[in-house]
Amino acid sequence: MRARETTATITETPAVTDDLPWIEDGGKVTPRDARELSRLFLDRLQTLEEGTHEYQYARNTLIEMNLSLVRFAARRFRNRGGGDMEDVIQVGTIGLIKAIDRFDLTREVEFTSFAIPYIVGEIKRFFRDTTWAVHVPRRLQELRVSLAKSKDTLAAELGRTPTVAELAAHLDLTDDEIIEGLVAANGYVAGSIDTAGSDDETDSTPTYADTMGDIDPALELFEDLHTLGPLLQELDDRERAIIEMRFGQEMTQAEIGRELHVSQMHVSRLLTSILTRLRIGLLPG
Image 1 (tube, rainbow, N blue to C red):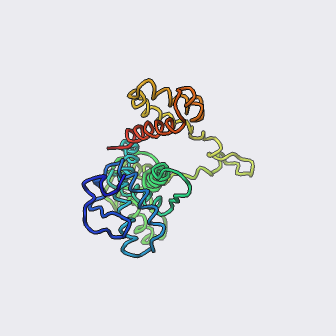
Image 2 (image 1 turned 90 degrees about the vertical axis):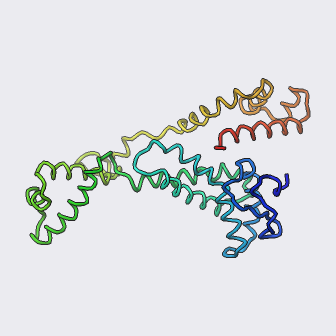
Image 3 (image 1 turned 60 degrees about the vertical axis):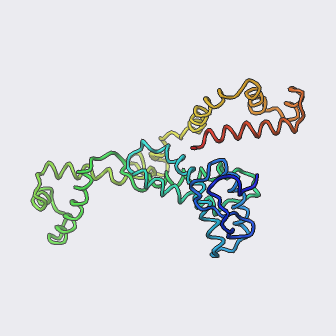
């Protein structure tokens, strides 16, 4: 496949480098073409000098072409509170940039498989660092800020920590409202899971982390398989049989060829075609 013929967004404008096509709008490149072009741009990026106009063009185009990966990853967090989706996408883009800068073609790994963990990791870090430990109404979140300022002001004037009544008088609120705000403020910063689980803080005392269960690694696998199920149903009987033999029975391509009475090369082409269709179905169009 010639890169200049993959999509209308690749124009006849003179190329920035001799071996890279000019792409006017990387965001309009289809996911299928983006995968093919990404390999070309990633390979060239490793030989370009950082800071040059050619390097920036290759890097920025890679980011634009693969923003669909960020949107795909961000959809997993759409029902999670504490962050606007636009912020989540921006944070995920940081993960994409890190993946581009650290990707090595010699690893023989698809860039999409390499980039998704970086993107998801950056988004999870965003939620970990910016959200409250528990859900707190916005009025109480705003009250926490007012309480913090008032406590500092009164502590400086009184030379001690102010009482609830003094805070209530300063903010023109009731004692109950101040107490509610102070309790809610405890949800802003979660306690460390390394804190001892009892008052007996000896070396043998178990921490809260010791009592927590681990995340089941099979959960994400289940999610992926659940998404893949309908796509597998769209394959014909022969294609599903090939997938079952290759990944279910772990047969080699040569063994599959003997089973189907075709050459190993033909099996390889069939597998490539099937897996490409499945990947396109999994990624947003």
